[in-house]
Image (cartoon, rainbow, N blue to C red; front, top):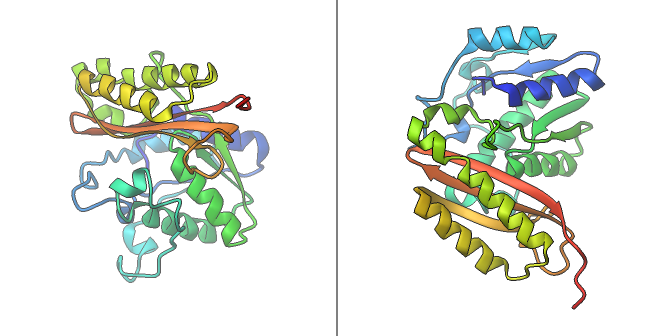
Length: 257
């Protein structure tokens, strides 16, 4: 959606390594914003974005208008990926993932890519797109690229610019909590609810308002249990008026119980 940072540009670099032609799109998609979210405030920096994309050898930049993508307005056919979109960010942002899956489907149809590359920072979004492509038999390879972080661990995001100086100092605590949870899980901690509850309280004491902090199966996004081998701990929390998301993946040891 623009306001590009090093995380976005790492996707371009990954595409450059495996593809002959690299296409990027910039479109602030109104369908994935709720009525009280930051659509009007979302940063739009097209001139700077163009320069960054050129410096990373992007071949084509597609910058449609809202009327290009939604010529009949926002009341139109939508693409809904069931179950996986009803939880986590989908539970607190109703309709968000319908907006994502609809616009991504339209962009896929317009561009006709062989490969599409997305960041793992928005783990649920990546899972939604992967399932959508499988379910609709789209002949597109979806690649997930590791989250880019600042030196203090904060996941890069266009929304980080909304943080005040004080909030920016606190924000890395989110990643630190995820690291501590991962460490506990790798040491065979089995009480997931207790672990998440303790770290939720720690984050709230730092000034975060936690939307969710959960340990899930990285493949299905169902609740992780003793049979889960590939796990992911996911968190969404507000710091001031800024919503931050992050996640960490891991491979768990087989249970001996």
